[in-house]
Length: 455
Image (cartoon, rainbow, N blue to C red; front, top):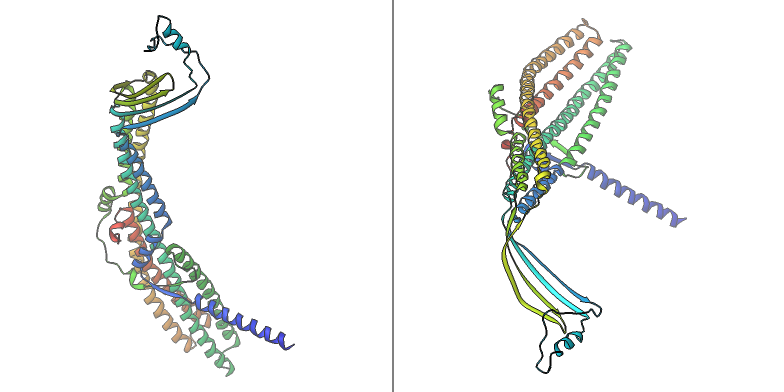
């Protein structure tokens, strides 16, 4: 029995120790500014890792195209076992020990060949290939630049996503703080009304209303805390932090100065700085180069060639030091009727890229207009909600005074309290939304990377 008690005590102790460790790890917090969050997201972004892999792929393709100018060097060799063939050399074999006219034919018939070995080395250096190599290198170079611009565009998208996630976690934390503050006020009001109800100053119905409001605020706090936890987990995954890290955002990160540029200025900046626009321009150049490379199949290929041959057939033949060199010409006559379709396909790709470029230019203008209007509206909302906060505070003071003088009901007082909380939340959220809208405008104009340079 004593042994069983000790075992239970040990289990309880271990359980308490693990619970304490879990609680300590769950309470891990990290103060994080917006710039720090962006740097962490850039370091741990899986999207940017994929972008770097695409750059490496395009760079390797460019290297492969350039290496087509280098000579080809091939070597082959074989060792063969064969049966006893009938050997009839047209060149008569001579022999110092033979005599008479029939000795040569007799020696030929006595030759036994049952094995052979040979080795061949060929080298070829292209001199002219219908400019296929030249324009292939040019096309690969343009596609490599397009891949780098795509990576820059992805980088801006990662930055913008981080800003949005950071704003969400800030709003969730702000909501928790404001609701907590309101809950404390609600609890104090319930305590005050309980004393008044005990002394018969107010009706029990008024106390029940304040208790109901406290319950509603507690439910709102639960939802706010849940939103904050989910926003923290999302942010932790984005930044590569442990999932139990509680991120404490910095309110100073949302301060910004006014930007006086008009929509025409933003459109001009977008057409000059958008990475996807520049990448499509390079893809158009690559498509034109591909057309020229495809047309090169109409022309023959000319190459400088050279080689070495060695062979050994025992009892019959040995070849060494057989070096050859010259100029070779190769032409596929079927290209006269097969290349036309390839050229048509290449030209069709050019038309597709040009159409995409026109569509993208229209999208840029639409996106700039939308982002610019959202930015203007967000700035105006800050002013409107700032006035709303002043009005809600003043309304609550007046309503509270009237309630103390029995001029309004408890319902009016509680409604004024809810309006005050909502006004504070709206004002806090408007400041965050304004920064997000401005950063979105910068991203749409292709200027967001300049705000957060590589470190």
